[in-house]
Picture 1 (cartoon, helix red, strand yellow):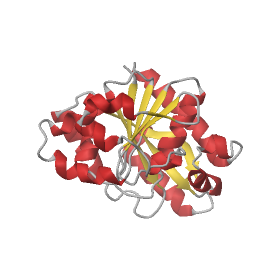
Picture 2 (cartoon, rainbow, N blue to C red):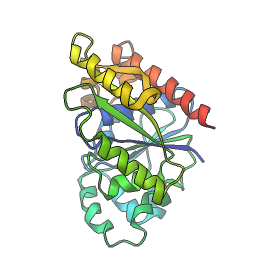
Picture 3 (cartoon, one colour):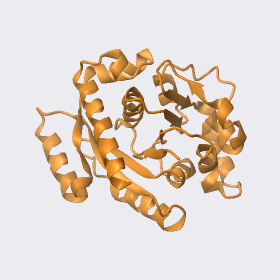
Picture 4 (cartoon, rainbow, N blue to C red):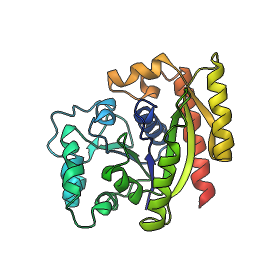
Length: 255
């Protein structure tokens, strides 16, 4: 059984999808089999890996309600060892339909249990609704990207309380893998202040790797490429390469 990680923050624009795509790509580069599970109706992880999200036969929406379709829906990307369970706008309807579904919190777990990959990275929607609860129920770990800006800590306590509630009621094995500082600007004293505050709150759960604000990182998704394929020498690429190493060290340390 592989390692399942939810990449989660209910705030949008914090680098969640960027982290999912690039962490997955670097893990795959290390020879590990990796599946990206796109659980965001925006489908940005899907398009960010070069898949046309508007011409898909089966998507996350279909497999959530019919897990037997999971293997059929899985798509090979252009990158070795990296597959994606894609999503598009159809997934937005799943929140409403899940309300009346039996054992609605466990639908995604049934899907992901069919995969034998080394890692599954779940790109969660920017909300704490039923799709996110499904992700947490199916995961071993949560990785929380946090943008180094003024309102960075706002909402984090609510996110942590949701994680705690899922651990208490559905998934006792769920752990916080770490908090990742994203869009860090070393020229801005606010970035250092946010880093200090997060370190006080989360201690050694804050990753040593910091993701810088980087133009090449922002450009890569529009070309449907992870950063190591778009510009492997950029600061953003080096940061995500280091993050992949750090994630593996933390996961291996838990075993």
